[in-house]
Amino acid sequence: MQIAIVLYDRFTALDAVGPYETLGRLPDAETVFVAEQAGPVRTDTGALALTADRTLAEVRSPDIVVVPGGPGQIPQTENPVLLDWLCAADATSTWTTSVCTGSLLLAAAGLLQGRRATSHWLALDALTGFGAEPTGERVVFDGKYVTAAGVSAGIDMGLTLLGRIAGDEHAQAVQLLTEYDPQPPYDAGSPLKAPAHLVEEFRTKSRFSLA
Amino acid sequence: MQIAIVLYDRFTALDAVGPYETLGRLPDAETVFVAEQAGPVRTDTGALALTADRTLAEVRSPDIVVVPGGPGQIPQTENPVLLDWLCAADATSTWTTSVCTGSLLLAAAGLLQGRRATSHWLALDALTGFGAEPTGERVVFDGKYVTAAGVSAGIDMGLTLLGRIAGDEHAQAVQLLTEYDPQPPYDAGSPLKAPAHLVEEFRTKSRFSLA
Picture 1 (cartoon, rainbow over the protein chains, first blue to last red):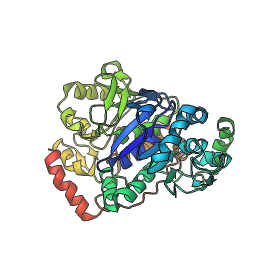
Picture 2: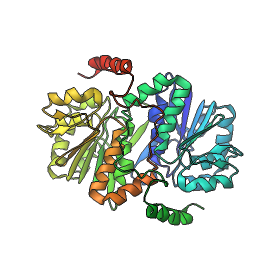
Picture 3: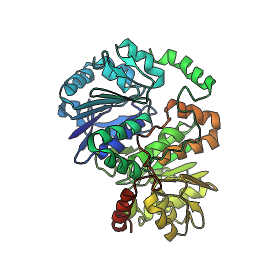
Picture 4: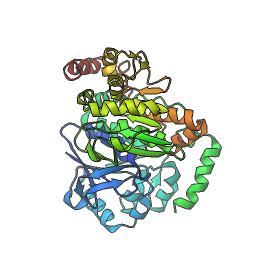
């Protein structure tokens, strides 16, 4: 089984690394990081690059597609090379997945039409524009399409999908090995829980950055 | 303020990316990935490389040092280049931190002598061998030394330290932006919670791999 994790300029690192570190522990699976060009791909902060070992053209029929989000997703919604690849890969994939605003790329490729899906909480409305039905859930399954909420939700998505494919016990072993027993110092990880003025500040800013 | 995240062959990606994605959102801070040689550094699975943009020699006095763990940590406990760098960087750092078995590198450098510290649950005993006092906590502060438990605990450590430095509100904003509202599909993320036979299997295996 082959897992392709798609990189593009200014993706968010944890969006990609969460599923890599969990779902990527699928027995006998090969995980490959792919991008339009092979080589280092910079994250949204500019302070980190992850290596794409293969080009999109070299990886034509992965069993699982993982699309991270990040500010760099916006120009990619008009990149025919990536969107065509997503459509072609999806035609033969067993699972097509995304984290954060990666779902907007699946949606822009026409893959989430009429489907329940999620995204970063600031981007849920944008899903509607592509004909998807946004939900506020953290991990959403609709057929073979699995979408996760913002950034860190890719860890929960990765473990959940790992359990579906390899069984609960294997997923629990990976949870134990990654010591995923979260103890956040605050309870501010969703717009329903964070201080209201922070939520409002981000919503105001995002009106200018997420068209 | 400069944050140096140390990479070495066969580190665990999430150990480094958790603090990067949280603590790295410190206002006006520069995060730099460093390694003995600059360039791509492969993770423990071999399927991913993160780029070290600078050599250890080029980054001499970071304000915050972050040392990830991973299977590649074992040979590094005898690498004088890395251990000398850790000692020198620690002499001027404001915070010296680790995730997972990264604490064994701090300990091997002599920095955790008599200090309370944590590590991956399978490596807690090894801390004792270096004169540290292991605890079962997820994030441990002892003076300027901050150690986190296995792999995913670096996210909690990063947010906690971010709150100490930049204030609770900034850390909450980062938690909200990374949508860190964890909902693991299982409750198996610590040896106290996981199925006992899984814990025992890993303990048996680790007797051979963690000397």
